Length: 267
Image (tube, rainbow, N blue to C red):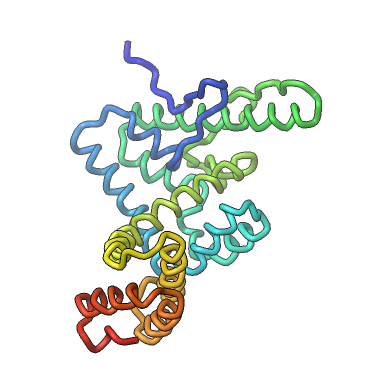
C-alpha cells in the first residue's frame, strides 16, 4: 500500500509549517507522475509563474511598496497596496482556478490525492488559527473542525464559488499570494541585482555608502518598472557623486565607461 502523501508538516514546537508556494502546487509536486502528466503540470505552473512575472515587471513600484509595508508590519498599507494591485491580480486569485488547472492535468486518482492534500492542509490551518484565537481569548484549545464539518472541503473548487480560497481560508491564501509575488519579484529583478552587485563590487565603496548608493539606484529601477531611463540615471549619478569620496568617484567613472562608454561616464 502506497504511503499517504501530505503537505502537513510540523516543527519541533508542534506548529504547522506553512507552505512557501500555493498549497495545490506544493501538493502536486509530491504525486508520482509519468512524463506526460509531469509535462502538463509543468506547463500549468510555468504559465502561472509567467503571469506573475508580467504583473511584477509592469508594477515594480507598487510591488516594492507592498513588500516594504509587509516587512514593516503595516497591514493597512499592505491592504491598500493589494487593493491597487487587485484588478491586475484578479485572474490569478479566482477561487479554485489554479487547483482546477492542475487537476485537469491529472487522472481521477491523482486529482483525488491532490484535493485530499489541499483539504488536509487548509483544515490544519483552520484548526491552528482557531486554537490561537481561543488561546488569546483565554478559552483554551479550540475543538478541531475537520472535513466532516465541510469547512475545508472543495480544494479543487469545481462548484460555483467553490474552492479553497474563500471564507476562512482567505487569510492563508493572501499569505500564499504574497509568497508568489515575492518569488516573481526575485525572478524579475534577480539578474539585474546580480549585475548591479558586480557593478557595486567594482566601486569598492564603504559599507554604509554602498547601502545608500544601492537604495538610490533601486529607487530609479522600481520607479521605471525595471527599464533604463537615462534622465533618471543621470540624476541618480549626481546624487551618488555627492556622497562618495574622490577615489570612489574615479572608480565610478571607470565602471561607467566600461559599461556605457565615455559619453555616460561623466555625470
